[in-house]
Image (cartoon, rainbow, N blue to C red; front, side):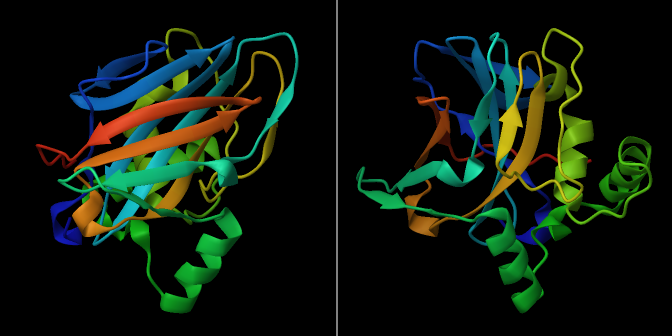
Length: 214
């Protein structure tokens, strides 16, 4: 996953839970899970080294509000023998501190053309605020089907694109990125579990078979 190759999309595993469906936009895959009128769509992207980005979209189709906390996401990787390893999931503030300390920008995997289009998109959507997470904005423009599904909805997101705790009211949506530190030998299968309103939305991914660039 060298940064010079651009982001790589993990593929949905052949077997998923009954409440999920695999969807694609422009050839790029994501998984949608629906449990009791709560919807979560997930896309897993590999960038540089062991860094992974989990792009999440939440939608509340119920008549009550509830809180979501992306810090509760659990990610487990498996090696070729099926042995599991727990991946590190960063809270937004924790990731920002780590990024600033090491001067490591995960979004640097985005190619120049993608960044240019992302900047234009961000200025329109965020009132001209500067980009703090280029990969988030790039994915926002590249995968609109995660954002809108089959209905018009504008998700709330923070200016830097990182997922944080959020109150999800009826017929509202939220989108953000969760930063993950993986293990190179444990990427034969990656299991993602996302807690929402007391339920677990589960997604299973396998390594990418193609590279996508924009």
